[in-house]
Length: 221
Ligand SMILES: C[S@@+](CC[C@H](N)C(=O)[O-])C[C@H]1O[C@@H](n2cnc3c(N)ncnc32)[C@H](O)[C@@H]1O
Image (cartoon, rainbow, N blue to C red):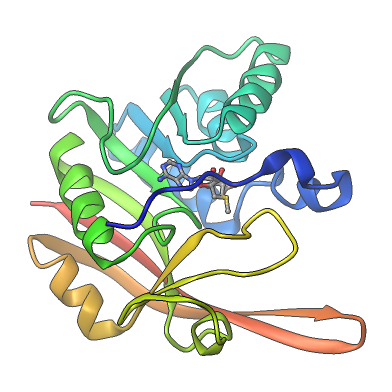
């Protein structure tokens, strides 16, 4: 299995970091959905700078903020404490979640889970299912094989995984890329409530880029 590697948040400049401080669009829907389902124990898996930790803690969920990066947990803690929000913080690797079996109702895992290889991905899926309670849900994103990244001439780890080479916080980090059949196989123990592929567009120095991600909502049955 390829070695896990945290994001280097220390080199992310303030203007770029701000992008990671506004909750994702679907997170507002998930707050509403999971409140209606009376879910309470929420895991922000790979919390980054804490945008979803803050959103869910402000909405009365019991939040566990988890990341491999010390800097991410430090910044999340500082932000939550400035708002007097009570959060459980842990630094660790998603390949071995430091939580009891069936101790979590809902998980948000956005732009995180792809940072491993195929073997790691199978382990993470089993960890998600181990910590979720029955009927618990997880919303996650996975890089798609349609993405620009998968077509780059980066070091290959296995048929689905490359090591990203760039001048930025993701340098040297493994990226797993999925397709529909692979997702169906990975989550065969789960009910897939929703699966869609989204193309995001970026422009930089006059050039247009796009990246494709699968968005999934899975349920433990
Ligand atoms: C793109 S950021 C997304 C942060 C957050 N989910 C959000 O949406 O704002 C990815 C985060 O995943 C963390 N990460 C990467 N590999 C990890 C691992 N093996 N275990 C736990 N966290 C990991 C990184 O350190 C980084 O903070």
